Amino acid sequence: MSKTILVVGASSGLGRACAQALAEAGHRVYAASRRPPRDLAGCKPLALDVDREDSVQAAITWLLAAEPRIDVLINCAGFGIAGAIEDSSSAEAQAQFETNFFGAVRVTRALLPQFRAQAGGLIVQVGSLVTQLPVPFQAYYCASKAALESWAEALRFELAPFGIAVVCIEPGNFATGFTAQRRRVQGWTASSPYAARCEASVGWMEEDERKGLDPRRFVGQVLKLVEHPRPVFRHLAIAPIERLALWLRALLPQRWYERLFRRLFHAH
Image 1 (tube, rainbow, N blue to C red):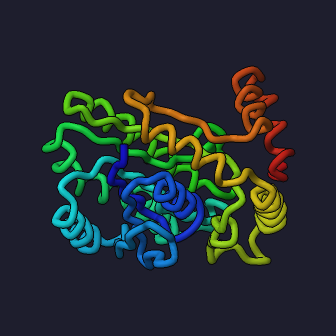
Image 2: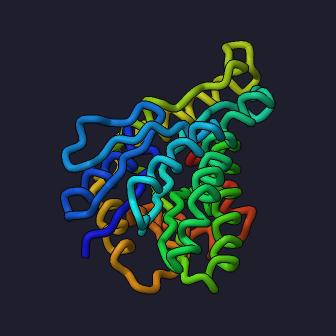
């Protein structure tokens, strides 16, 4: 059955891949972004800046005037910053949360009255594997995704009586434009006491991301979720080596785990 789906953050990365695949599967897809993509076949572009309340409200008001029902919301908007915590300014940390956390909050809240009125719907929040395996020199990205997932789980409890499902997908490393768009904090300079370790750690991770999974693996899970009548909350979209990392964290004593991952991420 064709569904009406809003994909936020559809201009690049996993969001773009989702919008395209959902449209190809026969769904009615609105591809939303600050600079909405106009080259996605079968998708309707929608201008929406998650950092601005007025932009979110205007976009959702227009959407609800055009569509009698919204079946699925997929929140993919986000970016990453990199740098040591000590080198990161409060403004940079706040900007990370503004998009990754509060952006999803704004869009979701704007659609909740519609979901309640129609007594159903699916809300998909895109989290990250780093909520379970935090990495050095990207602490604020990890924290923003952890906040989003905790918020989403609490929201799931609140919305269950209305027939609205909330789920979270935790992707690992995928080969997308996300890597090239990562921002370095201004305090990451040659004079920083963290500079060499930060360069080695982030450089290693970005190389690993470039060799990451094909986005179609992620899209496949989203397509299944859209059709699932009663989806569970958390879903992993990760490579076998990342599953091994989760297993090691659960199995190893904390001291051994820390020693291993400090070496792995060049943070020793």
